[in-house]
Image (cartoon, rainbow, N blue to C red; front, side, top):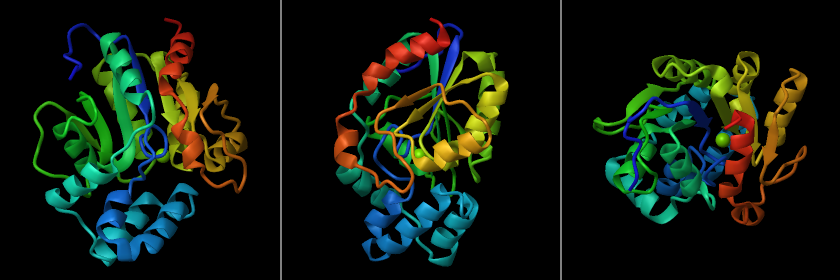
Length: 253
Ligand SMILES: [Mg+2]
């Protein structure tokens, strides 16, 4: 599998959310899968979090600390084998970025353990940096640098750190997000001069941006109105390799 080998200085950054954005998987799905008896409660907690009603920290505290639902490596592996999925063309998009000297970073509230397992199983091309939630993670991996997310406001902080480490100006950055959880990332990006793409954008993101006068430069995939339910069948038809030309346009490359 092709990897970003660090040869040459990256000229730009694509920093994307993962859950329901590049993948139909939700951040809490590995837990619901392994504890099906809790799936309705977990779904409720997840929706409250993506709708900005409760914080991510509170959601995970309820799930992991109050209900005691954590995962072993074997449980995560079983979930990945049966449920891992990404949208059509996402692998091509990531590999296009890697081979064009564009740093591709996943910035997600998903668990670090999910991404560790995805790399090990060859499901996602290995990336240099991941910003994700450390509440479930396994032994260290030696070629990825991990940044921790406890709240969605950590997303812009981690993106800033990665830009600074690599000397990439924020103007050469594309942020991709789908829900209100990406709101703080977009808010920072709009101020910093990054380009914003709503992928499978939910009303919670559109509303967040509208209320704050944040312009989303490109809306991609299935665009949801207020109160509209997700349509996984329509989402499956969207081909992310068609996003490449839009990203080239936004980055002026
Ligand atoms: Mg998401």
